[in-house]
Length: 430
Image 1 (cartoon, helix red, strand yellow):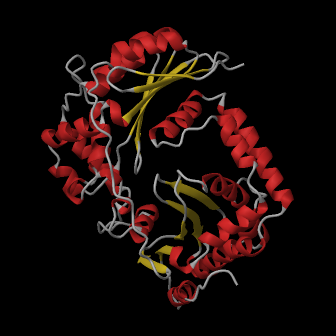
Image 2 (cartoon, rainbow, N blue to C red):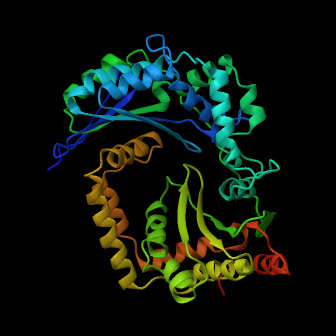
Image 3 (spheres, helix red, strand yellow):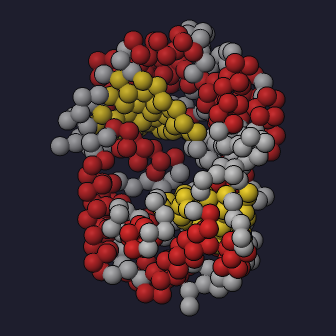
């Protein structure tokens, strides 16, 4: 059995929680930070991601990235870091007996970065940026382009990495200012999970993170929904397939509709027997791989359909994806579909207790974005979603002023015109 979740707040305001999983054999600690491209300005776009790289470049006590990695790996630990649109994650998983020393090193890295070797890291990040460009330097990453289409004048449309010119302009002063603004107690959650003792973790948090400044919660403007009709962008790219994105502006991750959105996604795409894969792949053989996802922010959200398709089938697949949403908006799911989704969700919640990373992320995300709930509360709320609420959610989303379609590929022989006609003629569910 799992021990109860415990939490505390340090004197500097840092919120700390411990989720013991005594059946496991490793300890996990992670810092979740309100940082990312949505908190940036045009001239600083990419700074959050670059700062993530620079944090592991050394401290006064560990002056190089090699020294940092060697110290953690000598204790059996592995460092991890990732930057998302509105969230940064830094973590280390290590043997339980190494947790004390690992915590000391982790606190040092996050609190006292030296920002060494900045020019070397610029080169590494610029190599990463190239992955999203073609040989002429044009942006061809469908995820980046779709977000720019949806949020043309808001920071949610920025790329996470920025571009080479911006990255080359970053200096230590900018890094230190960004670090001070975001890496403070007001903007961070410290999580412990796995084979840990709560009292020990609280003592480690106090010892290793007491020097973290209190700071102030970073604020950001909510995007304004000014879209009046469907949007379409076609980006020519020489490739074997067209990358298609059919996106519907959705609901925030924090709000009364969040649980309905969660279950709607499960009705659409939670295995190969659910509606999306069965319709597009099994029944009609239109593509090899198709998926749906929900990107939820604290003040907005996107339901995103992704498919790699033959160039000449782009309009057909786009029509099928739009019709799929309209069918749900008109008829809703069956009770059988919903009951299967409930069972699969319950199994997934149970499996979360086997993963220290998943459990830490669940609680930390809830606290960081003011939508805290226990796994049991999430399970009950999702189970209470009805077919009627799911139909109404699909109807809310499947509207012309919420539809954004992007195609990155070679649409020839009138395929671009066919896709344009489908998108522009969309009037919502019939």
